[in-house]
Image (cartoon, rainbow, N blue to C red; front, side, top):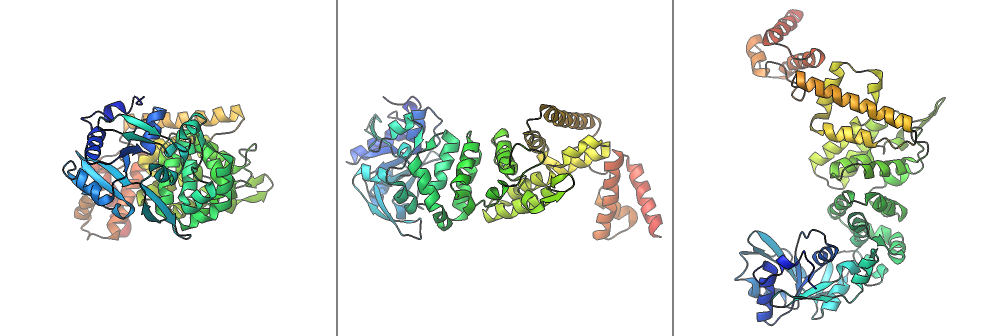
Length: 461
């Protein structure tokens, strides 16, 4: 039976069906393999179509040459030919058996004529299934390692012994928890034991590859379970060592939880937006460094300042893009600001908050809401009410003025012309005065701006 999501993709006139005909006419096998098979059987959206074949790379190029608009050959040394057809990339890989050097996750590739050998080198049994296609695209399920049974049991198990699989490619240990997060399948006990035993092998994996897997993990529906798995096996120590340090830091605001449990809970409450979830996970990582004991118990003064610096450093080490690092660092830095709203904010304070949050405002407010994990319902309602009030204040100011574009009524060019200045730092100093007046007193006219310039000039004379 063809999974419903695959039917339109496997028609004879569809790309997969056409490829099947090309390979069969050339005397070769072609099979759909990996995540697309898994997702089709689970009824999930299919993002990419990956194929495997007994044809060698040069033969693949000959077979698809007339069909593909272009070829992508970056993976040719590993047996993969990319065929670009109507703007889509279809990767076709020769059956392989691989041998890994101990200090490398890049395999020495040996080709195979047996699809079962090829499937054995894949990460998990649920990804080690294939649909062999005939010329009409009708599939035959190939499942030599029990992927269907593991799918029914919602279990992640390696086709080979997990020590062999993870020793060959340590990134598979991180993928174990990525799939836990994204599809909700639980690792089997041998895989967990192997991960704990081989966690230090992750050190040979590039930061970029770790970042890519972590990013996918962070936006999964089961992110909390995955994060606990990373910490409990020790795998997180090799790319997010700050997490384990949170486990012992008791938070006086969340007495029923250590800070790690609180941080994971906050992360799981947020929407699956990468920047927001990473900020939620890291928002309290400054607490171990700022922990102090006083008459009122344990305190973590300015942990958001220290935490923002730590978060930026860790994300840089993981090779995240600069903008994401800035955004996540700013969310961590600002996450305590709304809590001071209980002391009463003037309109200027609200403007400053909107200015400092900038385009992160909605994410920041969500982070602050999700940061409430206390069992004290009265306190939780009080915090949520304050955020409601703050958002209402922002809404009112938006109706009255352009609060999201806090600009003086005149620009730097006008300042230069009116005061007869040369471009330079002194113009910035004057603009800061105009800008602060806008924040403190709200919108004002050009006439008022020029009056402020006159006052500035008189004070300097």
